[in-house]
Image 1 (spheres, rainbow, N blue to C red):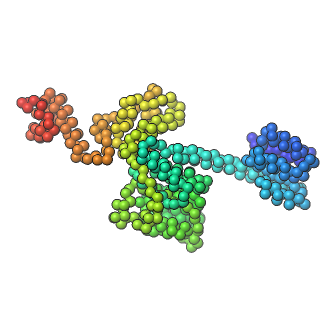
Image 2 (cartoon, rainbow, N blue to C red):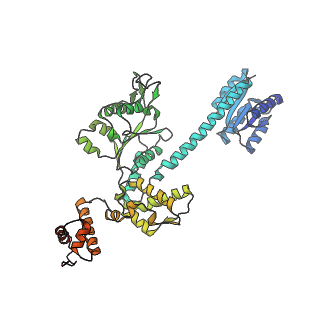
Image 3 (tube, one colour):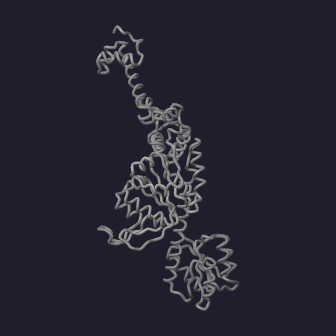
Length: 457
């Protein structure tokens, strides 16, 4: 229940406002003097204050100053006689929300109060959202102890205060949008919108409308004017994910918007100035796209003022335990489960996995494991088959330098050895179990140095 304090030296007016506002569902307190009002505010802050500017022991402006100094979120509405409108203007300059002239219409006051409290609620929700945004997307959410991730975090801190365009590259699942949000959260634009769009998710015509907006009648389904994401991100940050998938014609229009800092809605004639920091991302090597002529060089140089490359998870294996425990703590809290740590065997499997899906894959694996776990430690059997099967162990690392021929050679030798062991050294039986000829089996034995098995079988 919203709390309102009414300050006026006229008993009849205090009684009228009390009855009116209680019917509206508010808790109402009253005071007849400046001193009584300050005492009441000291004991219990209120959501809204309605005060006359002329009081027996002083000025209503003194109460306004007291409120703004001790409880800035409290909304203040001042009442004044027609001849004292100059004082009402002074009150507005000191931070009053609005003023109303006596004698006033009760319905008019009711509307003013409702609007004032609605705006107060919106401001409170906005502050909570911003706080949540910073907590969720701030630099503290970039997790890693590896030298490469430490370098990324230092780069984010360094470039965040600027307005330079940023290009973030890295495989899918490495956290490119998380880095973009961290740059925004640490920048002077943090209180303005962060707007994100996946350029690969929309066809060219829809992408243009999403970015620049359109006017009514621009195309068949354009029934009304629509603001584009450039306008929505004004004074903030626009994140263009998978920019390498943008069509050539759209690249030209984007380049023009970045160069001129002006956009034109689809079907419109007027140009609109925009102040937007652009951060782009791609999981494809842009240099290859440039050489193939699939990405404009002038656009590349425009967005690649600052380049941040996110390493794949397999390239920073020392971060795997840190990330895994971070996700374990998060999902343990969300699910209300007491899961303290990873069993040694579990950690070993996590560290040897190739993680083609990178951090996103690791997060999903830990979320699943926490959901399934019934003990205090994540056991190896809670991991998916992609991590626990023999094949997974063989693939254990698609690390830099991985060669498919070497990998297939190891698998072939392992199967041949296993077949010979199961056949007690008989090449004939082993060949039959593998579905190959005896001649092929002899070749495998020689190729993989398995000659210790009985050649007479």
